[in-house]
Figure 1: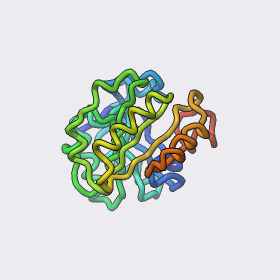
Figure 2 (figure 1 turned 90 degrees about the vertical axis):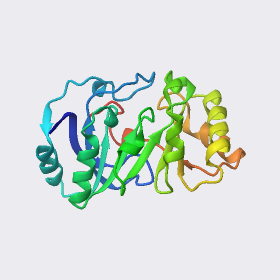
Figure 3 (figure 1 turned 135 degrees about the vertical axis):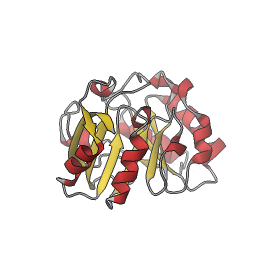
Figure 4 (figure 1 turned 30 degrees about the vertical axis):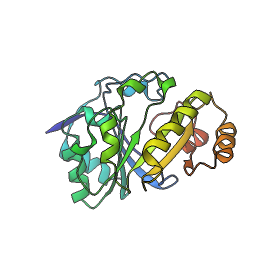
Length: 214
């Protein structure tokens, strides 16, 4: 069994409820979407090396970090991803999987945190959201909205009101880096008394915004 891997590295977790924690990242290659503001375009195509499951696991172990995120690209675009996640769990890791929300998240094993990115209109890919996934989210999972403008924000409010106002699934909002000032998004959230977590992409404020492997 092998997976096409873009990169494996250690850093801090820049987003999610685990932001700031040391984390090992397995970035798989290939994505079925082309978001307008994608910050990892180099991971869109399956151009990375094919790595066996054992090779990936052994590489992750060299960092000595228990928290691991499997990301992309779109990790669910490779059918071997659930087996990788299961193997990481069996080695005692806490596992996050970040997905663009267009593919069935129920393929992933229990015991992980699924971070589903719900694509807003400005991404150019909102029509590909697999809305059935929303009913498969658990309290330990998280949903992420990346906001570019007021229209995105109003659209997000509608989704939250319709689906998430009575659930315990964690809701994360962030601004498109370099487009929407973070303070403006915070003002909107406070004015609406929105019960959601604002987040910055911490790694972009520590290292150059286009740096890889961080």
